[in-house]
Length: 165
Image (cartoon, rainbow, N blue to C red):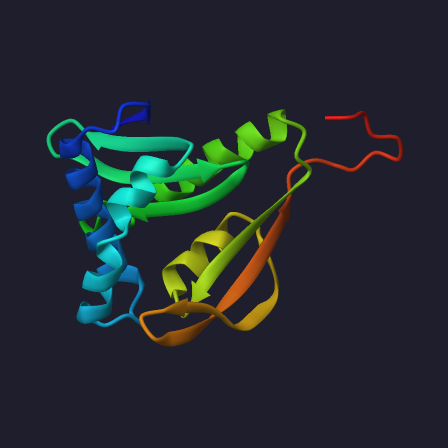
């Protein structure tokens, strides 16, 4: 398995990552119907083309199996194909992001999860995130309102006299 920061978003790569997205969403976003997934899927290529930093995990035999998108120090997307789930890949990607943020001087990281998404909630808890609270009826997808649960994790101590970033 290798991780690559992708600058050139070719049509083939966008197609492959959209399949990863769909596989991941079907395995984790149990609150979405098949019809809703198809509606949202139409926007995935645009999101993949527009995200500032795109990191792709590639299997030697299967091509892309996961990806993470980061925009302005915020994890915007993390999706893992169903066949690659349960192997620590999500944790590995998240740990890389947190180390980058720590090196940039970020002290606390936050994660928002559209719920119910038990697998994402478990991932955050396994990485040491603590639940902060839930924003009710804050996410709107396909004609339905969803709650978003927020998590936080300290990356570094706070000093009483911080240097400017």
